[in-house]
Length: 324
Ligand code: SF4
Image 1 (cartoon, rainbow, N blue to C red):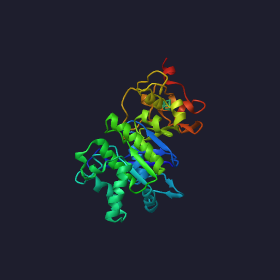
Image 2: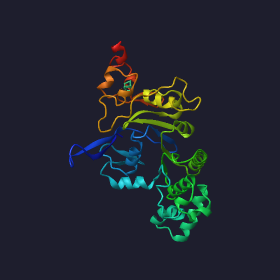
Image 3: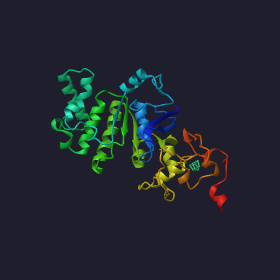
Image 4: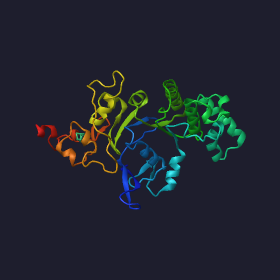
């Protein structure tokens, strides 16, 4: 609830410390058993949000509720309990495995940390490797000696070793070729059923989100602009940024309207625009958008949009109409 994260940075002088608001006032609910997809372009704050939830990065405001306990920014014990139920699979499998360790050693590392004996560890690693579709022959190899898909299977096996309830998947397919991508997607779907997992999938791949997502949230420049059940979102995205994202997917049937081309770049988090952070790139902006940030509004069926166009009565006139 209202989760915000700041990054300290140095600007305008060698040791003049300032901070950048990386994510701002994020509200979301992840229900057990769902595949919650967090969408948005690079730099929108998706990984920062996941890191804050897992306690890999401190948050400076807001709170996280988990299994009846509330985690505030100073409540580290509650955060440790949350971490015990979560694991993360990172986007670059080779970079998230120690290049000096064999896959066997990497997968069994968390088991050792939990105090499991060495012979039981070896058995468990073979079992996990089998579940992740990783041949036992490969367990003695190092990350540089196997393919990207095999490394990602090792990362998934390692993540499952502590029997988590929530798996954070941070762009798990980015570094893989097309065949390996399909294999990993099928594997993730199988494991979700077998282990009754909940997925928090971070991706900019809308086709993947439409394939496996049950709930979707869209981030732009550190803020959540739309969230909805996946069926509702893909049937009718409301936010102009979400529509542009969806129109860019080269997959028939996902977007019925004309292609929407966004102009300009994602602004810097150090100097976010006033009002709606998307207004410099929004073709539908109103006068109010330039100075007042919109609040999230329910547009029906658990579908929430953060845009002045859906505030019931627009609080300003369309800038394009004013110019004409
Ligand atoms: Fe566009 Fe205004 Fe909606 Fe922002 S609030 S997305 S600028 S119409």
